[in-house]
Length: 147
Image 1: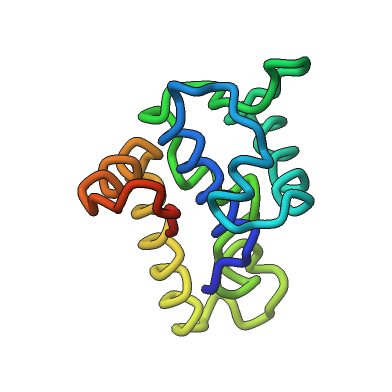
Image 2: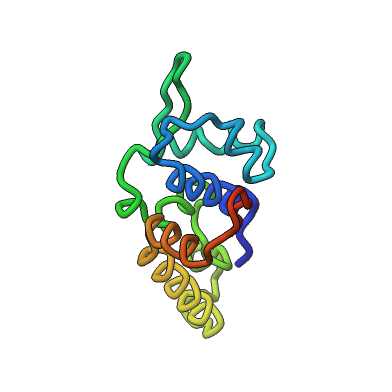
């Protein structure tokens, strides 16, 4: 399974928000600049994150975006689900009816195990875990944060 830029950039945007929580709300243009992601693309990504209750948008002169809940409560599994949908490597893992061989297919069993392993890693990783990992890497002052 290969994540699209939606999942990659959306996670980077959230990590940036978490790293700059004390400045909240944060302007999307500032995140775009730090992360080297187009502002238009971030605007597209923030919509499902707002609808999913992960990000809050504030209007006005001191407006911007901020995390809607603490970073330790935001699991990567919910972020990826909102931005990507299912991470099943093949369609029959989510819907056995798409293939008449699903019940007897041993490769489907492997793809299901793969999905469960990925779901487990994403469900056990919070945004706060990423913040700590980033801080442990001790980037130079002003460096961009990538994942």
